[in-house]
Image (cartoon, rainbow, N blue to C red; front, side, top):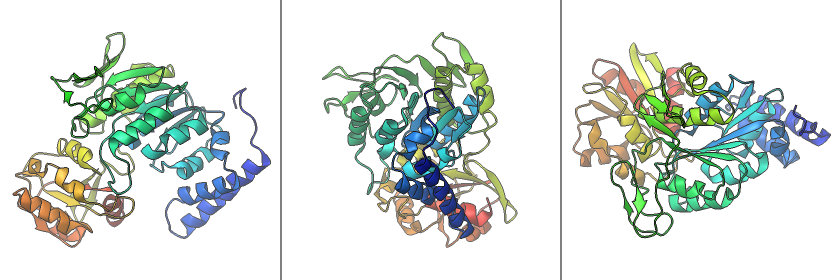
Length: 412
């Protein structure tokens, strides 16, 4: 425990004990990990518990629309080179889940915490982070989340004057706007494939100009900052111009971008890029994402895509046609009940793939694919879809609760 931290108060100890007991009861009842209910019970008993649990840690907060769970995992692996880490690496990213995670980290040196976008500013106030990683902002859960420009403004106000080092994606204008109120920013050129949420200037509302990889607003002068870390193909360039190879078991350009940001975060804590990137290679899957499982004598690769930006990145990493693809979409509370985002996804990228459609909202998705001019088959269950898929490894792409449904069914 650091010299600046104090022992937990009796009230805090009681809250931790009660939270762990509630979580154990939840697990015994088969209702998941219990992290959320455990955290809620603990915070009810001690509303200041989150800050107390974080006081001895060097904390990194990670927030974004896409990639925060994976980036949290990569940063955690990198920082383990310098000491024990406590993390909510399975994605329970609201205050209750974060509290449960930190309750198990009394001996840790670092806390690497994924934070839901709506809660970032509040959690930052509670835990006094040493670093905050901001990856991207795009439309997601349309019935729940604020419009992206409003969310960027909330971040900008909430992080204004923070003492934390902010590691931010220079290629996303919304992230740059949010981070620019912070006095200490490390800019990373991590790329931005999805641009449909950042065509207007977040500063003045003017139309953004986008020559090549650059961007700027001709009306007010808001523009892309010069990055000090750059993702360049399969390498990341550090502030000294040295190129470090990125070798990951996780697929796709988006994960190389996550690794570049993670290397920049690790460097803030004194972990050299070579060491950080070598440790990241050990990550094979993140909460089931990218896992290849055997089911009904077929190999299925499980891929998560929750919103238009995520689907776009996922389409870029699947095997080429004629690889069969199963698509599954639900619209439950954790997904957002508004499925109008389906019309923002360019499903024509799946042309040539045999497509099978499942999930609670399979008919909504079927209409979207019909309009896109694609051939597909609607199935009732994942079993039926697997049985009707042509030969070859199957790419299974699902949004959040649909992904969890599939994982339970295939035993992953």
